[in-house]
Each structure stands twice: as C-alpha cells, then as structure tokens.
Image (cartoon, rainbow, N blue to C red; front, side, top):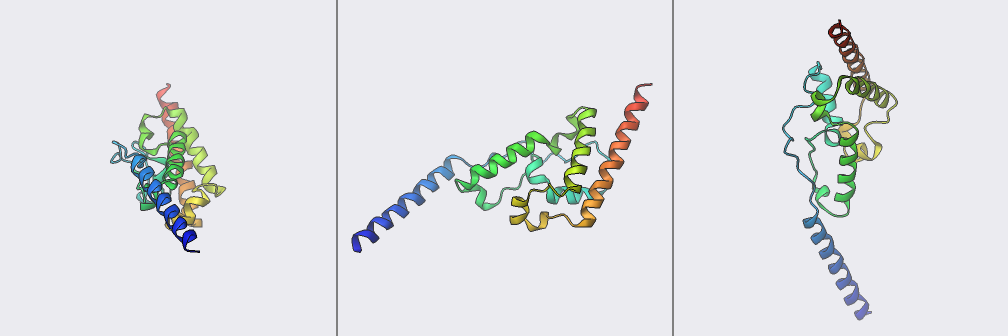
Length: 161
C-alpha cells in the first residue's frame, strides 16, 4: 500500500507539473485591438450595446476578458478554440470594416441566433450566468437588428442614386 501511495503521489505531481508547463507555454492570445469599440459605426442604443457587451463580447470581439481557468491547459485550448471560431464568424470589433452586405447579413444572423436562443452558447452561459439573455434582452437585441438593418438598406439605396 505504501508503494502505491508513493507512485500515485509522483503521478499526480508529474501530471500537475505537465499542466503547469503547458499552461505557461500556451497562454490565451491578447489582442492589440482589445480597446477598440464594439459595433463602431452602428447606431445602437446604450442598453442594447450593454447586452451585447455582456453576452457576446468575449467570443465575438477583440475585447475578450479571459477568466482564470482560461490560463490552465487543456481548458485554455478549448477557450481559445471557441474564441477563435467566434471571431472568425463575427468580430464586433471589426464591424466598421465589414462590407455593407456582410453587416446586413450579420444583423439577420444575430436576430435569428438570439431569437432562436442559439446564442450565447449554453456552455458559455453555464459558466457565465450573467451572459444569459432574458426575454426582454432577446426582444431588445432583435428589435435593434431590425432597425439597424433597415437603416443600412435605406442608406445603401440612397447612395446608389
């Protein structure tokens, strides 16, 4: 029994040491654009912007706020993969750089994802309970997407004359 305890202790120490080394070698990437505003150029009510900052920012912008566990491998790899995927799909820090058609399409996608409760992802809201959207939050974001999309369409129609 004594030899088994000794081996188990060494195994646990080795495992923790390996996790520590991997965590140091693979910290989350901090963006040079972390201070850039979200949805620059969009007309957005401060209440809706607050909802988006609370529920969407960490995966869909350069302003990700990494919690302590995102610095510990292998969880750090999962977090980084989710953030990279979210940013590739839609990066709210680069909103003003997107072509008009992409912004219009993104607004439709935001509306659908929020209305269908597909976003934010359940694995995110399970840990970040404040990111959950209430019915009022869903309605506010949905209404904003419709208003902003109509504004963009009207602007693009006016500029084509």
